[in-house]
Length: 241
Image (cartoon, rainbow, N blue to C red; front, side, top):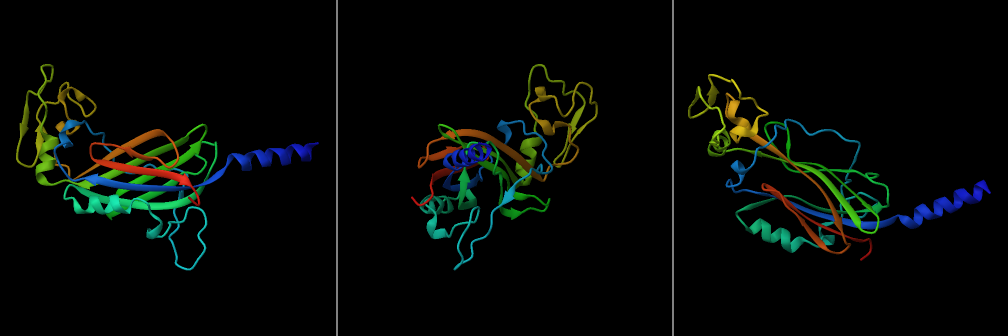
């Protein structure tokens, strides 16, 4: 009886798990006009998580799970080409792979990165995605986009927003810094001044932002996940389609 129950359980798990093709196209926005619309938390490193990396495709070899598919297998090549033609976007990552998807949340967390490695040691794109399923597919992402700031962008982040309840007395600013002479009532966690960089004494050279999302998806549909500084197109299909 015990052996029968084990076999039935194994059959149920196999039936609940299917092979899917996951395709991601991730791009950054190059415009600066949204930089000072948000209060960006300080992110100096990417938090490690138990995860697997994608294998690289090798011509002539049979591809297994979590191996980047050849570029000819990608369905979003036309959209990638359109983004590359635009002066306002920069493609950071465009890959697809086959993986099993079942009902267990975060069973297969995939670590992805793309773009250049910046002078602060961070990739332009880094982070994690996972997919599980119930009635729908459940796509989860925790992605980080890092960008080098121009002097103009740095000073945009250093410029405080005026509020009636903000205490900005004693602050002196220069072309390259904004130095608090009196820090009473002002700290890095107080958002009443409108910008987290207000108490910094040096101009920031880099900015890292996080896009954390959880989205229910139907297979075959193209989904767009948005952020002020970068975006992502996701398509998940049954393997072999």
